[in-house]
Length: 311
Image (cartoon, rainbow, N blue to C red):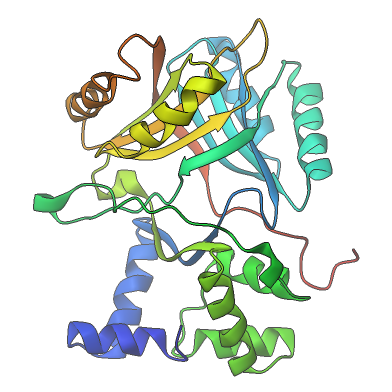
């Protein structure tokens, strides 16, 4: 967290700051990266949920448009399952998330599965991009300290989750927008990183554009007691990029444990899944693999209302 982060990066790479800014801007324009900024620990400074709809083939485009029209939806995918439209809804609080789900259900005419997060085991989604080292980043357990939050922090986080301005001193630009001092903003960002409210700060990429073409969500029908052992073990498997427990829906969707696999192709994804199913705690556990076949929407999460809006 420095005043001129792109100059710092340029020094490390032994190029000019203007070259770094130029290349990052080109990567954004080309759709290879979405932004340079922050991701926050789930359900801390905002509320979110994973949701799904079962749409018939001739309804998919219409229902996907209904889902994507909601500003609180930041991810929307078509997956290979009867429950085929999957999306993430975010908002400043649970009331906003519930209202979004209700609107989608009412306009689409379809039941929405609300699959709330119970606990995360790995949600960093960090990639190593060198061909010889294409594994996920090392898994570390982090405790989030919400006591560090101060008035105005949500406005800062909103800016950071949208992405840093592509200028030499991006934190000064954010400070000017808020009528605050640059060092004040830098101090608060550093505190939020140290407290793990900001779970990751860096380049947020579009994995498909960089060769990670196989995206599989694997769900496991496992008891809540067994997750205590299975969750951390699954999260530690190389190639598992996300892992968390969610609430099942009685008589409709029994799955509690979720894991994501991002691979270059389906064969590689199945190799990763084989390592997971070989774990003693998962060998006899029924599971389902849902590959994504189309991305309808992908952007940063909404943290709060627009700066300056009424509370």
